Image (cartoon, rainbow, N blue to C red; front, side, top):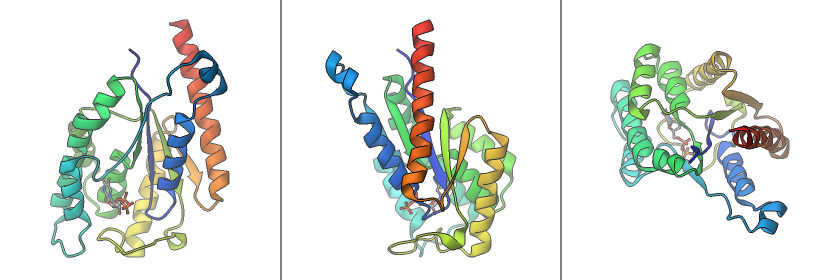
Length: 221
Ligand code: TYD
């Protein structure tokens, strides 16, 4: 069976990526008129998030976000990697192997942006850690919602990472944009200051194109 499609959403906090990820999940689970007619089962789409996509990850997430946690940057990075290793092994890989589409709210690019860009750890070290934790599993497509951290819409209580200063958030943003330059085939940058509707139209157009390409590749195979 063909491996499912793996899509990730990335960006600084409060940029609206969770809303877009949910919208994409809803869009992909809607049966099309043709599927209805042919009585094809609805595609299975899994929406998940990091940190916290497994029972172990939920505990790790609490440690990571608690403003009272005293935590060095290496310990922080290893906890994100531990969360991800469990998430890949327990949730993401098995779903993809069953042919399901997986949408993940944050993945390895967040560790590069926050722990290399924000915390200024060594990029090579973090890349190797990411590869090791994920067993080399990379997304097929990444939507990076970009926004000036000053324009973010933060709601609710501010967690340990959201509470970092503007310079930190700006280094995170720059690192995300560097990654997009490094991997232009995988990462699509979307202007987070556009309306939700405009951002969604761009994502939908791109996903439709990817699905059409996959369908024609399957027909040729
Ligand atoms: P987030 O998805 O923003 O949680 P919530 O939507 O509840 O705010 O992620 C929590 C924080 O963790 C966020 O500030 C980004 C940060 N983060 C890292 O620093 N490194 C990582 O590898 C990941 C996945 C997240």
